[in-house]
Length: 112
Image 1 (spheres, helix red, strand yellow):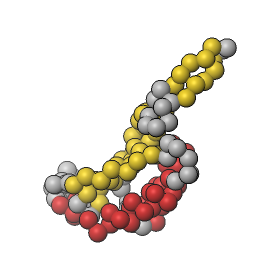
Image 2: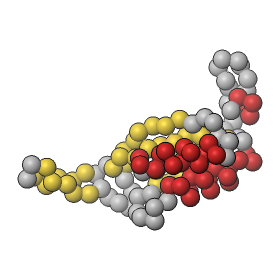
Image 3: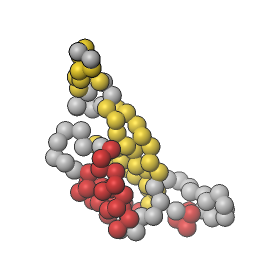
Image 4: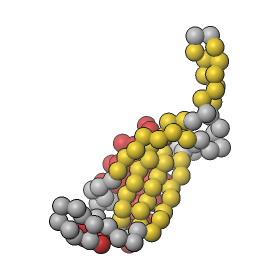
C-alpha cells in the first residue's frame, strides 16, 4: 500500500477529485496548506502599499491506495493538475505499513 500526497493549486481540486473518482478512488483527505517552491511568492498591492506574499495557497490531497493503483493515481493527478505553469505542485509517494479502519477493525488493503 502507498500514501500518495499531492500539493496542487486550489482551483484544480475539483478536476483532480473527479479524475480520481473516475478511476475508482472513493476516499481522500483534503487539507488547505500554504507554501512556496520556485515561485518564491509574489508581490501584491493593498491600499497603495506594496507587500510580498511569501507563502501561496495550495491544497494537499492525501490518498491511500493499493500498490497496483499507484501509477493510475499519479497519471490522473498529473494530467488534471498540470497547467504548464510554474507552481503546479508536487506528488509524493510513501509506503504505508498498515491501515486500520476504526469502525470495523479491518486492516490492510480491505481497510482502504
